[in-house]
Image 1 (spheres, rainbow, N blue to C red):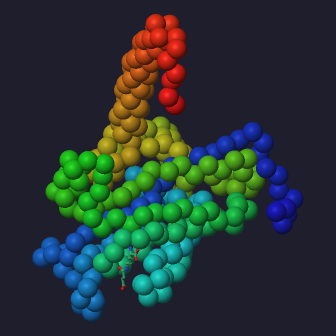
Image 2 (image 1 turned 180 degrees about the horizontal axis):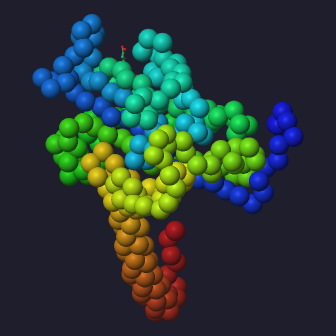
Image 3 (image 1 turned 180 degrees about the vertical axis):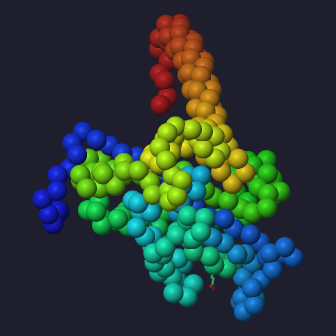
Length: 257
Ligand code: SLL
């Protein structure tokens, strides 16, 4: 689509902005009582959201978010134009079942970008690959399914590029300079950046630390895969040698395939 003005794309530039989307669900209990008027078959309260990592502002690139809920829920299309005080575009609901939520992200008009769709499976029950993982979740205060994602702006239009990289409005006392921010995030104060916290804290699971752990896990898995490939390669070669030996020994025997 041609832009409605004479803007140009900034060539060779890619800007990424980290964000989180996902859901948090809680079983109704004494600590989480049912709000009055909740249908009797509803068992959980839940929230689906899109927000910045470490609660950083994303509204300079994300204008609004539409959440498409299950058709059994009244008014399933929810357009959220404003962030909550914590900085999240979010929907709170109650219900009894899990389903796929369609999340449509609308960018600020200056971006001249079309909206983008993500899909999120609402989790109400403990999940994971192993019983152990589920058990950890059972003990937790709620069921979280949070995804770290990076929004990539490829060759943004110049006006949007300026918005993406311009200093933040920090109100009184905001200044420039590098310092370690809340949660150990290193960044230039007053600049919109793609930095994420150095360390993990409760409610802020995505950090350089998490990234390092994930990289180690992948590296270990890579070593394991290599070992297994060598092992099976050796076994295969042994079997092929054995087959050749048997074929030479019994030349008249036909192989059944
Ligand atoms: C399915 N997974 O495949 C189920 C659908 C729908 C959940 C789950 C209803 C809430 C309401 C609710 O929790 N729906 O009545 O407001 O069919």
